[in-house]
Amino acid sequence: NPPMAMLPSGAPTPLHNEDRRHFWLLMLAALVVLGAGIGLRDPWPSDEPRFTLVAKQMIASGDWLFPHRGSELYSDKPPMLMWIEAVFYLVTGNWRVSFLLPSLLAGLATLALTWDMGRRLWNPRVGLFAAVAMLATFQFAYQVKRAQIDPLVMALITLANWGLVLHFLRGPN
Image (cartoon, rainbow, N blue to C red; front, side):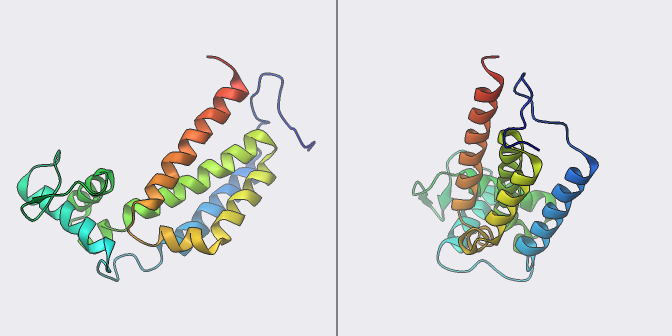
């Protein structure tokens, strides 16, 4: 493939079955690496227990709009992580699983978006290498295995950049 394997319309080159297989193997490897240990531990100080307790309070009180820590309004952090943790608790019924799921899904989304940007800008092989390099980075794996706001922010920033890349490749639509 040439370095810029873009079609004149800005669409990426068609994916072959081997490229799809490599992507799904990457996602499976990422799920194993990043998801190892989910459900085996409780929230760990300092931030994880605080966020999980805010999510528990949301469910117990029914007040999802204004997060509280006990009787005190919790305005230190944006509530999106706590909302997602609470929703996953309603789905799974297990806090040991639900408090880590937002970070895991954010990490998987970041890898998929990185792969897609590399695929669209160059070719599927470059996208795969970019995503593998990200997965192999210590700080990425370390943060995604914690119930912090950072992985969610990372995924949302990557999504915004992915949207810009799509817009620039496809032109005004």
